Length: 421
Image (cartoon, rainbow, N blue to C red):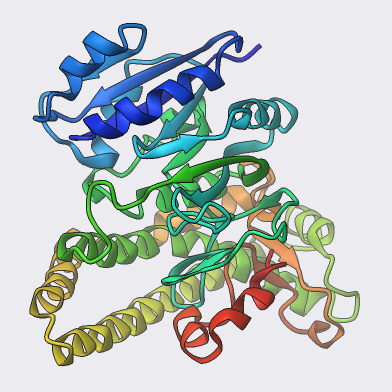
């Protein structure tokens, strides 16, 4: 049996802990090898004292300052050695049998590195919650969205997402991850501080060949905005900056794999159809390709990936600029400053992808030395029109722009994303 730790990172969430710890502790009674840990990010509201007095069975890790979501969890989880970590926000109310379903999923699916439950609102309990809803994706410009939540529009849960699904990311409000994977990835990117760090973590796990899944039989209720409210300029700044950093770091590897498979599929088997994983893998490692051809595939795929990532970041910054203009017209000067600050820090913190490292990574993927990464990242598009064209598409990325779709179609957008891969 795998051991597990439910770890709550707390910062001035005393009242949430007092309210939601009792049902949490009740939900794991009788589950062997599971414990609850509260890591405190230097709260000044008496959280630690309250825990010691009212919940002495809960282990407490006290940090010397507020390291944010990313840094706080990195430091806390280094002190734990369980097989599984469940990261849980302090403002989450759990369903009685939520945890059993997550444990069973990880035990039965060894290829899954991260999983999460459905997130519902605590107020409108039949509606999905903003932070993660029924699992997350990104659109063509890198904007995150969820099944059940697009921008500020949330959907009622009528069972439309009750089938387990592989997604690009699950919310950090309730995220289960194998401890070995968390540590091998180096944890969260600490410089993110908060926001987007769980999307970045899930994406990096996918780039190492792990699946990220939503387990709909598990459900929790999330208050949301417990630390920073939705209109906070600081939250806006972190989201804009971290989104750009994440795209710069994760997109080149993803696109390089996609381009490599499409090159082999398009030019070698133009009439054979889209399901060419085996053919492409055998081809790259077989006698059909000499070293010069393999080198050309690697070089071309890397060049295209870097070029397309730069183009994506350019358009994203243009779109961010448009949103700043809207904030300016609306009289939200603090939000304008947040966007400008995010772009300024991105220019300072951002690092363009090394073509040498990217080529090395891609070569290992195509040679089969890094597991079945391509099948986790790509799917074969079976549309007849794609024969002789681009056979492979990226899992977890929608070809449309969710912002525009949200404005134009509103509720009808959910019908389109229901069955997204």
